[in-house]
Amino acid sequence: MDDSKNRLNEKKFGRRTFLKRFAQAAALSSAASATGCIGLIQNNEMLQLKWKEYFKKNYRLMTPQEKEETVERLERLAKIEKHMDIQMSSQNPINGVLFGYAFNLTRCEGFMECVTACVKENNLDRQSHTQYIRIFEMEPGGMSPETGNGKYFHEVPLDNHFYMGVQCFHCENAPCIRACPTKATWKEPDGIVVVDYDWCIGCRYCMAACPYYGRRFNWSASQVPYNEITKKQHYLGNRIRPKGTMEKCTFCVQRTRAGKLPACVEACPTGARIFGNLLDPDSEIRFVLKHKKVFRLKEDLATDPKFWYFID
Amino acid sequence: MLILFGFGMLWVTADVYTEQRNVLDQVKQSTIHRKDLNQNDFAQNLPRQAVKAEMKYQGGDFWTESRKDKVERYPCYTCHTNNPEKFKGAKEMVHGDILLDHGGADKPLSCATCHLKDNPHLFKTADTTNIDMDHSYDLCGQCHFRQKQDWIGGAHGKRVLNWAGKRVVKNCTSCHNPHSPLFQKRWPKTYSPPIDK
Image 1 (tube, each protein chain N blue to C red):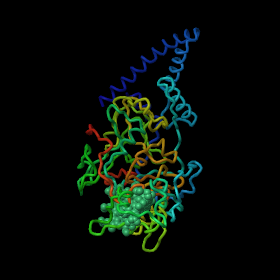
Image 2 (image 1 turned 45 degrees about the horizontal axis):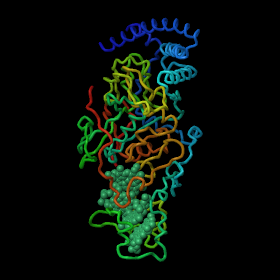
Image 3 (image 1 turned 90 degrees about the vertical axis):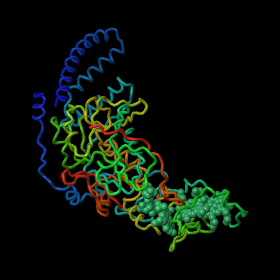
Image 4 (image 1 turned 120 degrees about the vertical axis):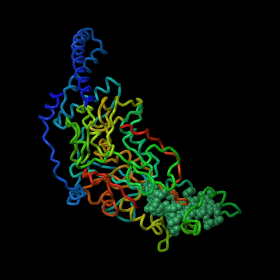
């Protein structure tokens, strides 16, 4: 609670100084345009963009045009501030698609290629070593990741052990969504639970509410080496998140809404990760649900995750 | 704080969470088929190296990664002619890199279990001969029936690139070395720091 208050104060304070600076800069830049100094004119444009950014709506309330303008603005800002050409999408969910995920406990060998692929694709903070996916090394019979070893580093697979990947489960009945006081997190029609990073106040209630440790709080904006940044981004996905916000797996919304597989699934060398459209009866995920004995974690909580485990 | 809070409440329409239905019930009632989705959205060229599988999966035709273009010594008939060069130790010299560890210690497979004796680029099973190297899943499937069924359905192996559009999957030998099919142990690609809650 204290934290959230602090953060709000910080934000208010931020706004006031920002307004002051804006006034100063506006005065400066009118002088600049008279002398035609390009640097300062760009500075002026940047301030205007930031001004609009600051007062934008929650993504869910934006009209299609506002979404379009917002992502264009962020592209332009990345160009001015970081000299980087990013492509940011605001692509909507596809009709008739509900994403689901299955994890084959028999196949996973603990190579962790999914984790590196996720870090790269989603521009995760390299400094704090943020990871959305965690792989637990489990003793036979153990069925709860709490009993596993999440910090192994030795040759894998270890004999007589199995590996269990955990990430955001995109629950149909997600406790994190209910916990959010600003409605900055919600479930999209294609089943992906997303965060509006600019609407998140960083109170971390959702993190406490998640029974699966699916959410990550960032203490700083992600630090990614310039040439490692994934430039194909989505507003609700892998864009560089502002400091002090909640982030997590988005089923790689920037990829999956374009028909591609999430980065973790594509990188998996063993085929332990299965992803697809739950509403398509012919999909691989439906095949698994039909023919394999599947289970979900903490099913008694009625969170209804769209992430199943199975053994074959 | 309060102001922001109230502001937040104003525009939010309360989500309804009373529904306790399982997502699977909902899913099973859906009648949407892959074909109903606008396939143009995923207009997808097949990867250059894909061949059409000889069977169908629940959703129709599918493709698998070709192998001939990846096998180093292909085509085999540059040496395996009607009149092969024969001298002592030739096999070790040429194929000495092949370590056969398949079938268990008590009943190991031999080259001729799979490869045709005179045409080793083709495979044989009890009831088929002349299986092409791109379709070696038919060979594996003779002895590994369950894995093949799962591979066709989508529970074993994996799709390449896309969940939507045309289905292209990895071939058995894209993942398994046919001669020693077990995955090798190796170091993980990274590690995880301790959880700080």
